[in-house]
Image (tube, rainbow, N blue to C red; front, side):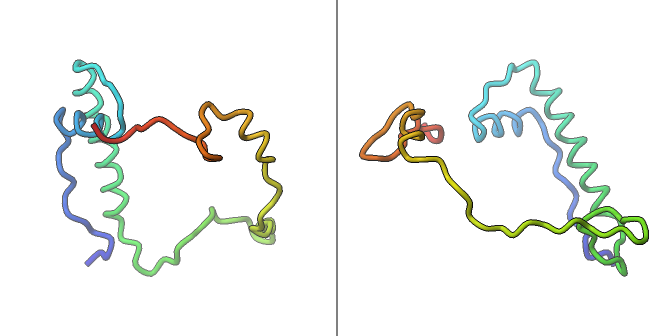
Length: 109
């Protein structure tokens, strides 16, 4: 049995697109919802096709295979670097409150 096998993907409809609109705080024209639902459904089916591939016995690859004798370039260490001065960030800020950047509420009613 394929360890990557999953349950069938649910069918997306215009109600699902409307729900996604609310979650993403988007406004989609009603006439576009069916097109978006079809496109999202096609994407989910493509992902299902990938998960259906039996990969037993294959090691995970984090990069494409390289020609023989070619090595991956060394990655730089993940270390903190210079940051913007606080005054520069504050100068760009639309709204500051008690030293914090204030942003508009985007979730909820």
